[in-house]
Image 1 (cartoon, rainbow, N blue to C red):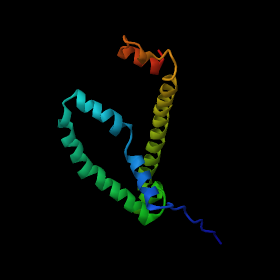
Image 2: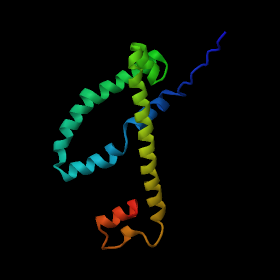
Image 3: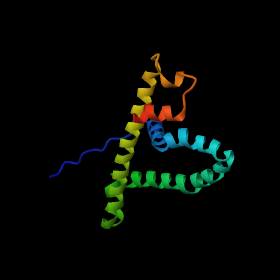
Image 4: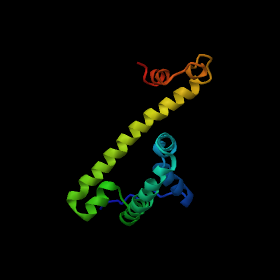
Length: 142
């Protein structure tokens, strides 16, 4: 006889909401996108951004949450529930998540490194003649 292991559940609705927002809002939304808007035309970028958000992003988010609630399993088995050949979509989703974690780990390491270096007296951005090349050399180390 097989023992069925009970899956973990969220401790509260707020924990789920914060986890979903934390997964959806990243460096691109907070850091990169506003700087691109300023560089290339301001509010003109917000129209396609909002269209993509409401017509693509939110429906896919709702669909993903609905599939997770219905199947109560991971990505591979969710897509495998439709057809066994769709398990590759779930594997690709897991691989993309892994690559995202590796990428964000590096970005967070840079931010933490710069934060602690900002307390020193020899920080490169404290000098008046700092250029973009100095910033690139600081982070890339070439």
